[in-house]
Length: 274
Ligand code: SF4
Ligand code: SF4
Image (tube, rainbow, N blue to C red; front, side):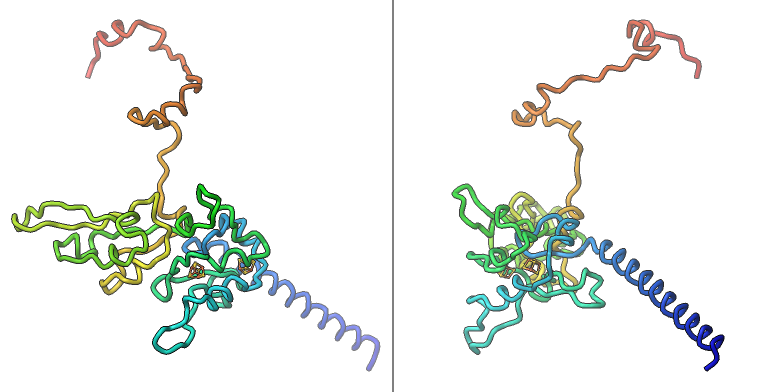
């Protein structure tokens, strides 16, 4: 091969590899962008904030393995192990590959009392400290995997049909989901028994979502940052002494306008042309 040919080949090969590297970089950046934009994912109990979780989790799969192998996951009738709650994300799941998550309609979290999935985590992505109760014991009821939300329009209890499937499925019976009695004015003689999720108690296990009888669950778990609103610190509950304490030392911010320099009686009695 002539020198000029081999040089041309070298240039073409280099251009190809640069092109492939650039394409790979574009695909990877597109992939990481899309995984960052997976706001609906539900993580295992004790998972730290999603942005930190994505960097902390070393994708070892120990949590999913512990979940799969937990004692309570053996089917009593067949003696066989059932599908575990936690899955490890694969390509095409639109999640960071190798990170654990769960889908309540497939397998919810059964809120194991010993929480086998959390202590095995070597990276701190699942933080045991967040699951300690007042006695400093691991307590699954402290988990905040998400918050169940009721879609009133498709929940048949809001139509007046008797259904308490989600209420009965909740492991924190009558605490995380309560039933609210309301008179049914349409019939005049029946009552609504409406499921109401208590956001301070709901752990987001998804047992209610799995139990819901409607075609697409009318109660479903969302990550807390999606499900919850935020009123803002400047709203103070006048009837709540703790909330009052929060603002006792707050300094007022006064602004002066041309109008505020005057006596209110002056400008309130001003003639205004409409
Ligand atoms: S607490 Fe939930 S996620 Fe953890 S092992 Fe039990 S079922 Fe699996
Ligand atoms: S055990 Fe911890 S580090 Fe390993 S996959 Fe689960 S969350 Fe990630």
